[in-house]
Image (cartoon, rainbow, N blue to C red; front, side, top):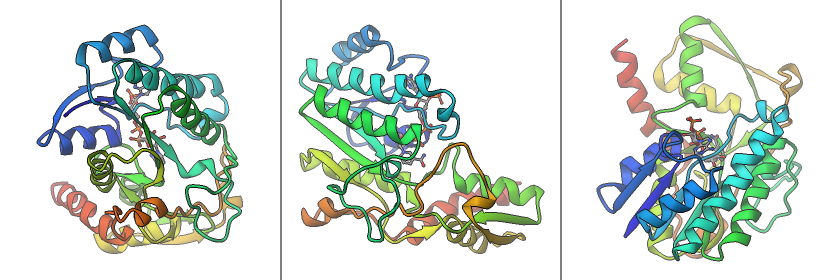
Length: 285
Ligand SMILES: NC(=O)c1ccc[n+]([C@@H]2O[C@H](COP(=O)([O-])OP(=O)(O)OC[C@H]3O[C@@H](n4cnc5c(N)ncnc54)[C@H](OP(=O)(O)O)[C@@H]3O)[C@@H](O)[C@H]2O)c1
């Protein structure tokens, strides 16, 4: 099997390439080599590689900046998604698109399953929802995985932010009234591979199990790494940001559960695994 990964040096893309390369033939293209908004270039690249699966890891992920740079976010998350899906279809390949818990409005009291009504609160969330729709329309052979609160061993993420702040501050003020599913990129790659091998198609939720607030997520990191810093819970209103975020965006991996294909662990176990790497980094500081 041949995989083409676009947006291959992002947080998730780099793990897809690193973890799947030993198993399958992977061609990895980063933004400088292939811009997903360049439809002709994309077609040419896909036609030359002729992959079985195109994994679209390219995305505009600056949630707050999307509020003022709507066109730029739309170009990558929607037009880019359509371009990737169409190019894959032309060579008979499956396309994988990653979406987000931010397609929901956060008013639910129970975890969202795949059929729950969407209602994004932000430009980013709207572009991810439109990106899903564009992918479905452009290529019937699609797999859409909705992820949430992603962190990995590399890239910009909440774990790294907590570590950085712990070096310069003696107290962290972290939002406690937004609840979601911290999710480890490596677990997403394992679930992705299972889904590809099992020929899953359609839209699936793919998050580590359980739930946490950002405050709960931060305290877990601080305790496990033994960081010398206090963590104070605050409310969203005390930390104003340009984009509105859902208060409750817990996802249920219901379809993977029903199909007995769910390989996602409790979020605390996945985070502990990832923190081993950060602990090594700290010990070298
Ligand atoms: N991060 C989260 O918490 C989270 C939560 C839910 C869902 N997701 C979704 O999960 C997926 C992976 O997220 P991530 O955290 O890995 O994102 P990321 O680290 O921001 O990676 C995105 C990658 O896309 C590349 N890119 C941007 N514009 C491009 C373009 N026009 N053409 C080609 N490549 C382009 C970026 O390159 P440059 O770095 O050079 O710009 C980067 O390598 C995304 O679809 C995201 O929406 C993320």
